[in-house]
Length: 287
Image (cartoon, rainbow, N blue to C red; front, side):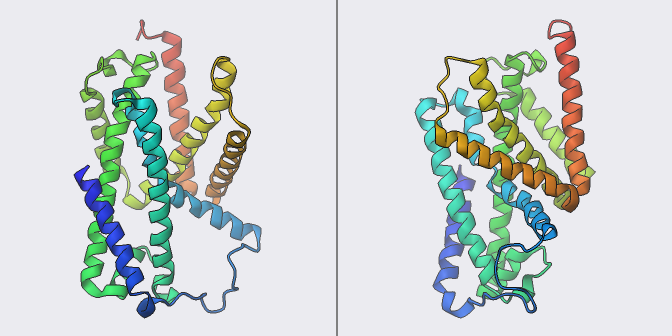
């Protein structure tokens, strides 16, 4: 919590600093020889745009982590939805403001095809000190992402164990899921040595987008299996449909923009399906 608070203060500080210097750094313009306008003009351009949206999806990941600890939260029916609404609003606002600064703070030629956009922008608007501050903020942002997944991931194993679709050894009977946390940490360390950060982020963006779509899709399935559950309102159904269509477009485009990571994502689901089918066939009592 302390690290998250520090990260938020740094992000807000950078945004305030950038906008206070706006008259000095605003250089937003189109690249030379580029058509003005954001709407893609061809199918290939749409493919690139949709493929890059996997980064956006990954940037928004984390606000939903509160739902994974609902079973251990006080007054969960009130606090968890409130936390998710508040986090969604904060993440959206910070994302839009930061990217406004990243896009318009410098001459577009400086950030074209560059990976370290934030560092370049920090140096341009405030020199080496702001660049260093930007690097520290990015590091803290990644650390808090790791912490949130280390908090949420083991709870998923724990609930799956309670439902009988994972070994009971992961069931902690209301206590902290220590074994599941150790397994999560071990798998994360292994992943770090198997690939580089950029590939991992592409893979995570696609995989988490697909998992999110499946979770949303399950709401319709759940209503059919549980007749007594609260029916979806019309605007909720519309929102689900729009979300699923956008995610399907991102996944389809990623076949071209991120082919290796797309195959890795499919491989993950295939292996998960095999493990699930094997587990359900032999049953928890036989495993």
